Amino acid sequence: MSDLIKTRAIVLRKLDYGDTSRIIHLFTEDFGKISAILKGGRSGKSKKIMLVDVMNNVQIVLYKKETREVQIISEVDLLQHYPNISDDFDRMMHASAIIELLLNLTVENENNHRLYIGTARAFELINNRAKNPKLIFAKYFLFFIKEIGYEFPVTHCSICGKELTSDVLSVAYNFESGILCGDCKQDRLIHSELSKELFNLLFCLSTKKNDIVYEERNLVVIIKLLEKFLRYNIHEFKGLKSLELV
Image 1 (cartoon, rainbow, N blue to C red):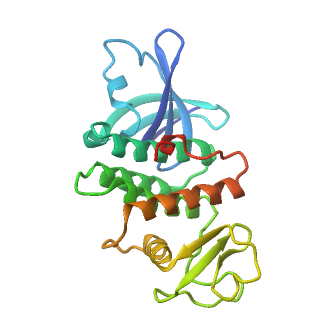
Image 2 (cartoon, rainbow, N blue to C red):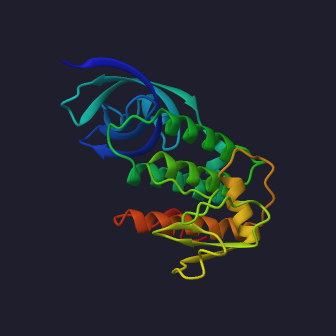
């Protein structure tokens, strides 16, 4: 027997199914990533199909059954859409990278309320023309990594435990050990050398600080470092196709 469930969700992907229906991949507030069918969703008379565009934040009513892999959508209401994202290549590119992360690196039916809230907030900020989408994505990327269980700690040396502050001259990163202070990096393999400027930016991105001073090129370096970090820890992850032009 199915339960009638209401939840909020971010639309990740939609695929044609049969003659008139669509399979919708969603990241929901209460159930994590799920798949659901929208019957008649390709009909020209269906208003629902316009509401389940990718990236839209919607409220859905589901006929949900634990033993069923694909749930059934009964109702859809639009909570928020993001017109400034689709009108801007850079915003679209970084928002698409968020969708990629959710599709490829989250587990089906694993609830993560914080990740849903954080994703909805990230889309709101990327949609804001006053915000830099690359900066928003870099902060989200660190948040996402932590939420899926691969935290990227930056406050202390992973070997000696020394606190790393903004006056540190340089640090390094080893994918197996983590952040290395100037002393500990001397006799260890270094995968990435972080200048004082880069480390300070990484440190700020990992906090709730909003007035971050940065250079665009350094944001790119940090995003690439985080991609490499995930590739090292999750072998099936091959990088973010959405950002290949960065």
